[in-house]
Picture (tube, rainbow, N blue to C red):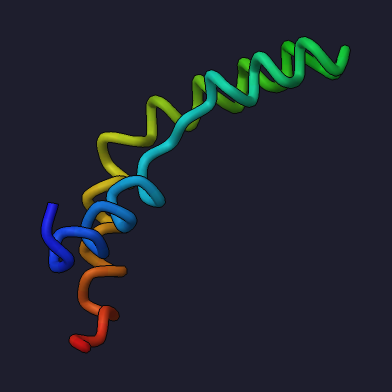
Length: 65
């Protein structure tokens, strides 16, 4: 991976939702698992629309170094 690809990689990782780890941590901490799973489901359903939208917004704001 070249240095130029690194900012794009961080942009994609930051724009994508990842709820599995939070669900596991909520379960281990004896938190509200139902709420965690519900928020993860909503986030996963919104991801196909929001991810390209967020990448477009953040990529336009990037400053070339």
